Each structure stands twice: as C-alpha cells, then as structure tokens.
Image (tube, rainbow, N blue to C red; front, side):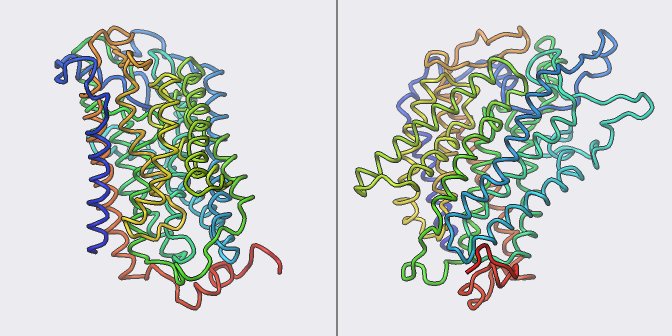
Length: 506
C-alpha cells in the first residue's frame, strides 16, 4: 500500500509539473474569464450525444432526419474502433509477452471486448449517456429501451455538434460501446502474464461500472445543441451536462475517459498483482515483434475511426481530426526512434511501434480542437516524453507495468490533455471555443491559462476517481478470489494452465 501511495504521489507530481511549467501559460487573454465566457466554454466541449429534439422544439419544427452520409461515416468509424480491439490491441500486447502467454492475452482481449459490449447494451449506455446528475446518468435506456417506438414504428435519434443534425441513436450506441470496450482492454497490459482470468473478468465489470461509466458521463454527456437559443437556455442545458463538461473540459476523443482512466487502473493493478517471477533475472523479451508491429499498424488505422469519428459528422472537424491524428502519430514515431537511437545506439521496431501509440494517445483529446502544427508539436513531444515514461519514470514508480500502459497511455494522456488547452487557442492555430448561442466561434477572448487550469482539474479528477475505484475493486477481489495465479502456473505459462491450449504448436 505504501508503494501505491508513493506512486500516486509521483503521478500527481508529474501532472503538476506538466500543468504548471508550460511556457504558453502566459495566455492570450486575462486568466479570469467572464461569466459569459465560462458558459460559452461549457457549450463547446466534446463528443457526446443524447436523445435529440425536446418535445417543445419538436412542436415548432419537424424533427431532423439523419443524414445518410453522416450515418454511414460513423458506422465505418465504429468498425475501425472495433478493429483497434480485435485484433489491434490483442496483437500489439500479444507480441510483447512471452510465447507461453500469447494466447492468454488474446483471450483476455477477446473476452473483455465481448463482455463490455453486453454490459454496455444492458446498462452501460444508459448510465453514461442519459440525463441523471453531474456524475452519472439514469435508467431511461436500460436494455436500450425506448430507442424504437413500436407504436409509431420509428427510431429515436442522437444529437451531434451541429444544430438540426442528428444520427440514428443505435449508431451512437455502438460507436460509444466500441470506445468502452477498448478502454477496458487497455488495462490488461499492466499485469500481463500473471493475473487470474476469473479475477480479471470480475475487476473489469466493477471498474467499467464504477469508473468508466461515471467518467464518460462527466466528460461527454450533454443534451445537444438544439435546445440552445439564448444565454438562459444555454445555462439550463449546461446544468444537465456531466460535471467536467460543465466546467468546460476539452476531451475530443478520450484523453481522460479512455487513456488516463485505464492507465491509472493498470498501474494500481500492477502493484496489487505484484511483479512477475524472475523479473530482472529471466528474459522477459517480447516473443514476436512482428505481431506487435501488425497490432500497432492496426491501431494506427483504427484510430482514425476513434478520433475523426468523434466529430459525429462527415464534416470539416472530422477532416481536421483525421489529419491531426496522422501527423501527430508520424511525428511521435520519429521523435521516439531518434531519441532511442541517440540513447541506446539502435533504432528499434519496438520503439517505432511504441512511439506511434504514444502519438495516437497524446493527440486524442486535442485532435478536433487544434491545428495541424499543434498536432506536430504534441506528437514530437509525446515521443520523447513517453520514452522517458517507460524508462526513467517507470524506475521511479517501481512497478512491474509489464507492457508500459502507464508510461504510454498515462503519460501521453496527461500531456495531451494539458496541451489541448494550449493549442486550442486561435492564436496558435486552434479552433477556440464554439458558442451555440450565436452558433459560431465565440467572440470572447481565449485564455490559455484558464483552459489549461480546467484541463488540469479534469486530469486530477479522472486520476483520483480511477485510483479509488481500482484500489477498492482489487482489494475486494484479492480477498474473495485472489488476483494472481500460483507460482507453478505462472512459470508454465497461462496459455496451458488457464486456457488448456497453446498459441503455437511445438
């Protein structure tokens, strides 16, 4: 427990260092925004959707009809996000473990994905994306109830970021369900090769319910733009949104909800499960960097659905997120490889793949808010900062984070979330804040310092929330089931001892 407390202190120190040492904090405008500026910020945030068109609005005008191009685009993006889990993250992680544990990683990814999709459709979507309170939604969509009206033979729609533009709600359900599934899959890399399969499944259920769903609601839930007509309706609709959305936190595609959230859970798990037997003595080298490269490539391709799809429309914002994702990832790959080449004298394939993932992670919260040159800077920094995260920081934390989940997803997610507040500034090529009262970019001055402070709060809240849920869940599971396989099972490998089969025929 002392190690966990020490590691959390180190994490918060890292966040504080990143949050308060940014040279750009001089800001474009006074650091204390007016009340109207704060409300405008809250109205412009991140991908979220709810049932569109309030009854009053529907009475005034015909309900908007989903655009077929937008619908097709988000369905394609959903498939791409699924590709990130199956087989992307499975192969990426699988190649990094020893051959005796390859199948166990594949099975864990496959099973978690299936489990989360089931839970998402039963209660997850409802708790994340329906109106409730600032922390969690309600049960209006339990079992996806209410999306199809049998009396009217009609389907409900979900709001996007443009007034009068909607999606079929089922499309939004599956898109966000794919996000939830890959987030849970990310965690397994921190304690690969030694956790009980049963313990892992129970943990995922608890963490998904009490950490992922509240964070998704806090960051992404709002009632959509259609009801916003003036300052009064803006304030009314903003009060219905999630806590961090109300604060104006910017997270386009999941820096907090996905990456920081999962990375904290993984890091805490690596302490509770303990270090691998033979660490520092036996070879723990990846058994197939070929598989890892294939997985990284699939992640890169699938991430366009993750980021560009979060625009929820086939529009300019989707194109911006697309180019930013491509550029930041390429830049991070280059900077990681060059940094590793300089330090270790060899440019490695593992370094290239890790750099690509670092760039993808860091640009995720920012991709729809910043300009391409902002993405370039974020990518270049991500490669170097995450290289330090898996080397220097990992040693400081003293954790056996097997596949460097925190070093890449945690560090990259924190850095990206904070830099979103910087590079979203119009003076640095960003999009600024959109004001739905005037239905165009806000005329209020953009304050970098104020927005970075909001981003910092989002990072801290996410880290603490995930840590508390994870600590309680791991402790309970360890007491009831036990987290770790026996020493003999670990030495033989989880493929045979847990699943009764092997990834390879000898």
